[in-house]
Figure (spheres, rainbow, N blue to C red):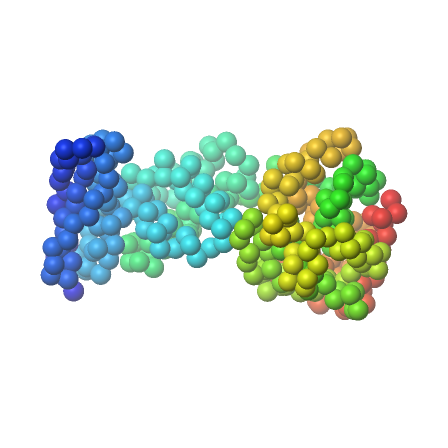
Length: 366
């Protein structure tokens, strides 16, 4: 183990053709090494080059007991987190994380050393961000994850974000469709989008679960749908949580709709996606929604909605039909009991099937 902290040597390397480059030389395992940090077009001065190599320097000295923690910036921490941790989460989650890091956290706190990040200033900064409380809560949680990683890497011994108070309460109540509005939307949709929305509304599936549904997940004999995966574009994952993978009852009326859809589908094998695109792969839910469902909602005159509107409507309609809270929790497949109003008991299968039957009939016969 090296006992001396390595800063290395940063020099500007002249080139006959093209822009000059910044070169960093350092020692590792007794050998001299060098790496090109970037061109002067991207890093116009030495200060910019130093910031760019900071995460490399931190990683090089990770096991050094003399590492000067008070010189490590949030920007360096972000770079190391992106390099070593970001690929551990799902692709769509990575996109959100990068947005929080690059749009909000790095511009404000990137040049600040970890030791100077304080709880109260972070609270004030979050409060001033012109976004919803829920989005500000996500940004706060991302900052918290960064510091948790810093603690795991022994870059700091505290997480100032743990004490940051940030409400995630919604500004507005989520949009809910009435059965009448749901039927008006279906009327304006063509296949297969009509069937997609019908399945989303009658089973309360998340959009990624709907896109990841395969024919082999449908047990026609026992009228049950198994939620085994989720899909985001070309990326296919396991379900969000263990609770999410629980089976869902399939009403006979909806089963008939699905069977008709299968008859007209190009892809019918058990491993084929129920709502496959032309290539046989899962559809891109964002593009699909913008091109087909949003225009249909505008034509139906029911206003703004999103994919999660169908899940919210599913939950609200279950409640309105007098469904037991335990049954609601099971049908929504929530991992946290508090998410479904502090449910504390498991629902029996007959009760779940009865609830789905009532809800499906309500939507089909609106």
